[in-house]
Amino acid sequence: VIVGAGPAGISATLTAASHNLRFLTLEQDSLGGTVFNFPRAKIVMTSPMNLPMHGKLKLSETSKSELLELWTGVLGKNQIMVNEQEKVESIEKVNGYFEIVTNKEKYTSNSVILCIGRRGTPRKLGVKGEGKEKVAYRLLEPELIHNKDILIVGGGDSAIESALLLADEKNNVSVSYRSESFARLKPKNLEKINYAIESKKIRVFYSSNVKEIKDESVILNVNDNEKEIKNDLVYIFAGGELPTKFLEKIGIRISKKFGEAILKH
Image (cartoon, rainbow, N blue to C red; front, top):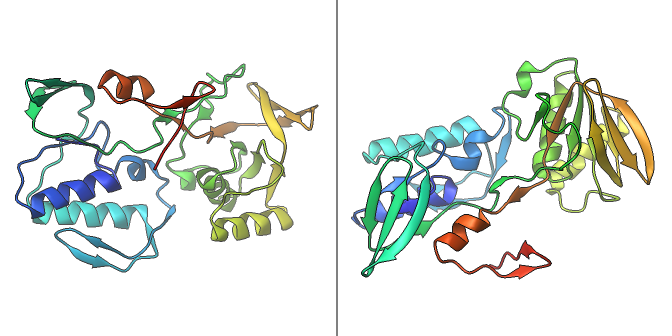
């Protein structure tokens, strides 16, 4: 049983098929996993690779729709089914084999491959007003959003790419980032955001945190000073929390430091 149908899960699925193994792939959301939830206009940066049962891919940049179309085509061509909208709730070893229970069915398997990624569930800020309808943790259709005052929270690639897409749609975009500078962006994203800042297309509040989200504004702490800015929409990209409880429940030991899971590769 393969758990997850994002890039890793699809690769595992195609590899299993190429070796004529009996397998079942389960995806709690839709085919593509995290990629499925990318904005439609997002450019997906990748590198040349060998896709099992397809051959070499010489892509450096592609779109979400092109990537999903490629995966769907390869799976369809080889008559491979993925069980979408089926969430794994427990995995238990019984008499030498694994028993997998989902929200729909119960399965048994000799082996289980976990391809659930690192994002987990979106990490929340825990601030007043975060439960308002105008707050979201992913951006799906930026081309439908125009002339809004928008705050992006975060300084990673997802946050900056979303800010750039929204700025292109004639929105007034601000970014709140807790650090003093962008230190972990892909070079192309860093170049684009620096240009957007210089051209005053995007406003960035470094060394800032959200204090409160109101109906028509947001209060930020900027260098220990409060600043209230006009706001219609808030998009939070503060990373994800690993499904630690699920992993521990199925018998995986997780090293922790200061209460946080430590990722090891």
